[in-house]
Length: 415
Image 1 (tube, one colour):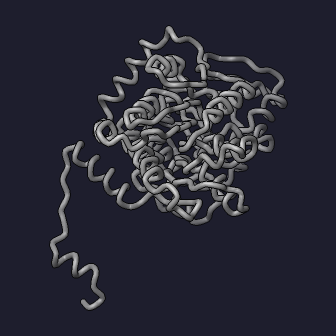
Image 2 (cartoon, rainbow, N blue to C red):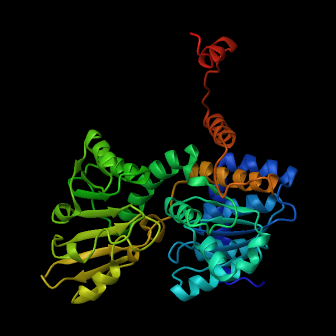
Image 3 (spheres, rainbow, N blue to C red):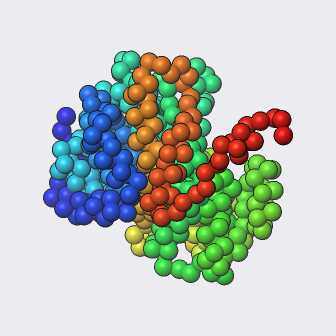
């Protein structure tokens, strides 16, 4: 099936980006070497919905080295880099994605990728799994299983499974320690401010930064904001996470109160309407709103657009909204993932671990075809440990090993 991209002539630029991240992803390089020899995906069709930029493109090339046939699409209309998409097509892979796709174009791209007839689905937010169940159930029998790497996608999968609707096994990649402890915390923390600072060119130090959600992503964002000199406020609905934020030294309050204080608002909840109509009149003149959760519903941009008396683009990826009270507020990246809509996403060294988990989990599904009885599957501990051990080695660190006596001591109840 013919690829759907913007401009194949952009391929050389995309190829340089992919080569750069490859140099900085030694773990994934080692897996590529293994896959090239072992060919674990020989005869296997893989459909991926991913943030289509250089690091994910390299993951695609690693899977292809393992013998996989690929159909690739974006997981967010604003995160596809057209030159990277072109570079993958230039390598002979099928790609259906372009930057700033309309909602209709985005869904059409998803359909094209699924019509490929995948055996393995690698999803980022759950759109592929949702669409194949709702629109293309005739393809489900071909699916061995899939991987999901986002908190939002896992929430959707658990809901589907609870209702008896999930028809094939899905590995919860996001729940792996080598994913959420590093990708969600350090990757999101750094890349969010990369996107904000690149786009606004404003200082963070001395400002009030409101972080909505204190999961692993929120912890990372709050930590980076504090490191940049901000006063950090956390808003939460979970009392345990709110208490943790207090113990970590942050102020905690409802959004109704925080709305009047914040200079920057960063949502990382996976929920909708976190900053909504009830908050707009409370926002300070010049308040900047952005989202680092998967979907563009955390900041209610639609309601803001309807309520504002005027809209004016300030510069690329900054839309200004003049409110009836005379205050201007600004939304970055259309309320989509700010680290990808307005930046290059997580650092390569972080995604080295996350994509290693993805690749090895996909190989695990193929190896265990027909043997997995549960629909919701955790990443096997041996994969998590393998990734951690390899990563430490590439970083130049070593660790102790238990002696036989120590292992026996820890595994005995007779002390």
